[in-house]
Length: 196
Image (cartoon, rainbow, N blue to C red; front, side):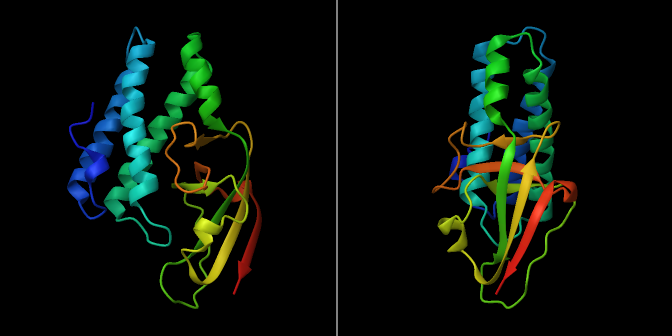
């Protein structure tokens, strides 16, 4: 269980945010290395995963970049989370396999880039391997309402052996985003549209 209550934090409490995310990341590693993993252990870990993912979706904002230390803490978290899901996908333990199959997402996702303040600047995607939010829903009015000025729409096809992390399964998405976390890899992009 995390020593930091991420549900009560504001986005500018950097040290507490990083501490909570880092603890959750360490708990993923500890679970993965545990010799006798069981459903109760996984349920306890799920509380930590849900807390971090809920903070990700509820306290980080569309069009506003995260502070670098927070971005890197989330990156380490999602890298370990993905490693856990891949391990569980091939697990001989049925409860792990079921969770992994539900959470590992393959399919089409959409990402919208823009500014959360009036601007004529077009935002171009970065292909840096950093985990970001995508939506399973095309034309998401909730997301689009957050932007001023030009919007960049990226369509991505996540195909095996790569997967996204489906946050719907943890019930951590907001609005109707149907959020998937996946890095922006150039080879996975099928279309980029720039609008004024």
